[in-house]
Picture (cartoon, helix red, strand yellow):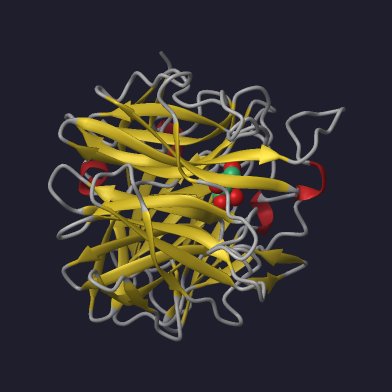
Length: 439
Ligand code: FRU
């Protein structure tokens, strides 16, 4: 089977959201939204890969594919949990109202129905798509808790005394909202509460994720049309510190949010607990163009999520950080899986990585991908972090199609898709950058 290293990429064709990310029986399992026939979005399958170290990924057979009336047109996003040695996958089954006779992989008028489904496996590798799928939450009818079409992406976790599920949805005013369900046995689910929508927070909250860390409880959502960005409406992934009461299933949201990444290209993040109990998160890098006409979509580096003083940090997972041990003089000597450039920037200084520019302006890091993103004028080219607390250390992880700028070890991250990155590094700074690649 083929492999991917550092940055997860599909074995070919299309990927979007990471799904069912889980450390299970000694391996990280990563499923993902996959169209196996072309590098474009289409009838969704769950692609599958495993890794022992979050560095090397081995592609597996497709795990989920349409077999039932309810998921005839796609197995949409969802999550995984382990219980008594079994792996349980939760996902959204999609059935289109009509058929597009020219391309059965597209949905006429975006009219479809969605329900929540489950399948389990005793080894995490074998899924009987014909026998083992069940509908756990049927498609919503008129007047029911959620929207018939836009109710999806179940995220399940174990609480103190029960299992909980968050589902993305939208309310009758067209604002994003979440539904919370509760279960004693992972199979029978009861509606427990809403996380009510609000104006200005997007129209449909996709891919919810929720977890507790030492510094606070974090909700991650991907609201559609959160903002107008450049010439387009932009769906963005955001996070915020919330209150959640298990007994009442009441979740209280603050009035403001942070982006998970300042590059605004990452979407549909999903997290799990790593082998040491840290919270580790992945997200899909949206790419406007397939690479070599062969594949589209990849994941950012798995990031450890921590909350300090009310701010959410995203730092490179240590298992990945420690792979970059070979000092090199130029990117031309780098391993295929990329390299890291580290330096401190003073106010007014800059560094150019193969045509991608990073500047410090006062207490902000700004980036500009104009030179390595030709032909995509509809997209935003320049990015800026909020104000940094103290100093400015950069660890810039560079792959052929993705630059990730970690500022102050995760205080902020700016990640951008790029095309045609060069091999030269230009520095206008006092510090001498260190370049490291894989051993
Ligand atoms: C987010 C999303 C999810 C959905 C999936 C379909 O990118 O739209 O809400 O389940 O992708 O591929």
